[in-house]
Length: 129
Picture 1: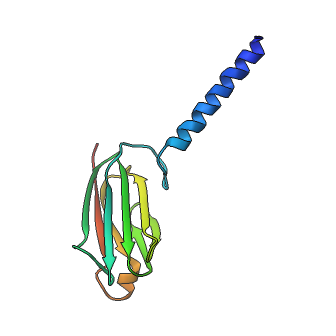
Picture 2: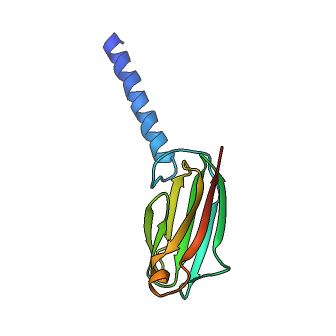
Picture 3: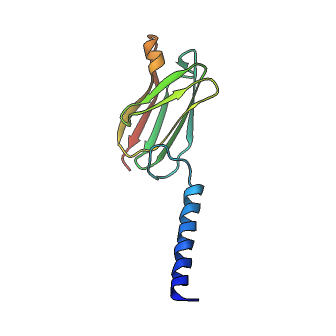
């Protein structure tokens, strides 16, 4: 095998390994890696959060996964990270990000706010790593 053939084989192997890594990695809506955390599930019924607003606490660098199901069309906003998602019957909103900013951030329903109801869906607290 010539030197050029060996180099080509090595480059091809690296490309295949990188593609496999990318395909096997979990989805990433908002960038970054980070340590995995559990998925927080929230349900909105009649423009109100079932069981009250969720309190989510993570350490800086952790992955955050939040799924919000709603019985009506809704616009949700994660303040501080400035991420907006839409939810509706049969199509939950999925927030997935690396918690790379410390602080306390609210997820609010613009639909509830527009209807004069309490907009708070959850509070995300990101503590130092």
